[in-house]
Each structure stands twice: as C-alpha cells, then as structure tokens.
Image (cartoon, rainbow, N blue to C red; front, side, top):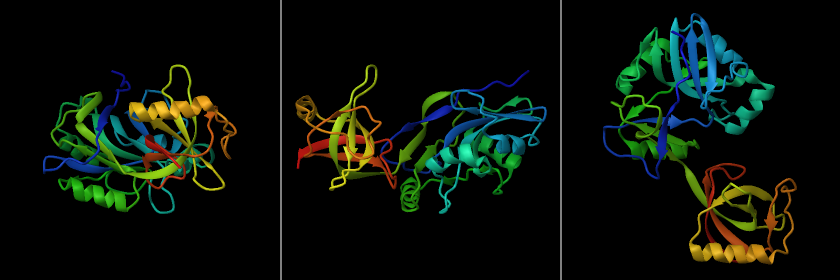
Length: 286
C-alpha cells in the first residue's frame, strides 16, 4: 500500500511551560514543518499542508532514501546561523541560493516498514526514531528532549536566543490536528513603537503598521490589533483623521497612514530584526 501524507499533529500555543515530570520538552526550531515519506528506497518531502517539496529539499530526500524500506518521519526543515541557532530568514535564503545548508530535524516517527506507529506512546515512537536515524549531526538529525523541568528548560531556551520550546505528553498517541497533549511556548518580548498606520483588507484581520520611535521612523512590520474597545476606538479616530505619510521602508505596504504621535506597546518574538507573531497590546499619546 502506498504511503500517503498524514496531516500533522499540532501543538497548542500557551503562555507558560507546563510543570511536573509527566512532560518532555524539546527545542522549537524556527523553520518549516516537514514530513519525509520513504517507500522502496525513494523519499519524498511534504510541507505541513501536503505539498510535495522534494525538489526544494533534494539533499534531505537524498539522505533519507536508504534509511528504511518504508517510513514516515515528522520534523522541521531548518538552517542554522553562525551562532548555531535555527534562523527562519536564513532558511528562506538558503532555499533559493544554498539548499545544501538545509537540514531536517526529526522529532516523530509515524510509520516504519509497513507498521503504523501512531497509536504507540510518544516515547516509544521516539525510541524507534532514534534507532532509525541515530544521534549524529548530518543532513537528518534527531531532536533531543529532556524530561520534566519545564520552567528551567524555558529559561535556557530564552537565554540561548531560541524561538521557544515544545512540551509533549510522553504517553500521547499521534493524532492529526491541534492537540493539548503537545504545547508550544514562544519567547516574546515587549517594546514601544510608533503606530504609523493601519492596514485593512477585506476578509483579513486589521493590522497595525509600526515604525521606530526616532527621527528615522523606520518601518519594522505589522502587528495584530489586540486592544480594548476604548483603545481601538481611539486608534480608528486617528485613522479617520489621516494626515500621515508612508514611513521609510514601507513604500510597498498598503496602509492608512496617521499623523505621528501615537505610541504602541507591541509583543513580538525576541531577537528579530522585524516584528514576527506580533500583537499591539496598548496605545498612548506621545
């Protein structure tokens, strides 16, 4: 029987890591969720939505061809930067210019040599995975974990400048879709930026367009608007008044620009040159 793409099991986003010994914790790698399927010495790589990206991940596919007669491996395609940290922007660049830098970090095994492993406990599946790929540092690598100590693990991840962590129930079966048996916790920080405008498109949530609070007023990206009703009304009063101009670096951004002077408190992923997974949480007058 031909192996088909399996919809991934997806962690639920939470604010703080779980406590207690009945959780294992892994690094959350900053890349593209990827599924590698192997059949009769030929491997294929799929995106999280089932699109065949084997031509994009040629080196990964080549390294996977001889791992098993058949297997489905779940993991993340990443690129490591100079500090040895997974870097999403470097991954996007490598996909076009240097695909040999892309590696596959595997964290789950769904099928192996004709056997469906999804009903097995997570730790048992991971034991089979480690036996299959080994603990080396080649094109396909194993995602190591620790047992318990979620708060300490999060502190270490944050200190190392990583995107976050994923916590999993060690006895969990693999069930496609979102689950609370897997949790993801990201490393955020909050900063003040100037609100330069708002982007409103039919069918999409409105976004606040943010710039630096200096003479340069450099565009740093957009943030989802998570304001109280009163704050949201104040923001849209500013938008209706208009009188703003596109800031530096936002020449291709469609926005309704407002007059300078409105400061926004933004929660965003740490150590990013521009806003990522950001939310506007408060506003005040300069």
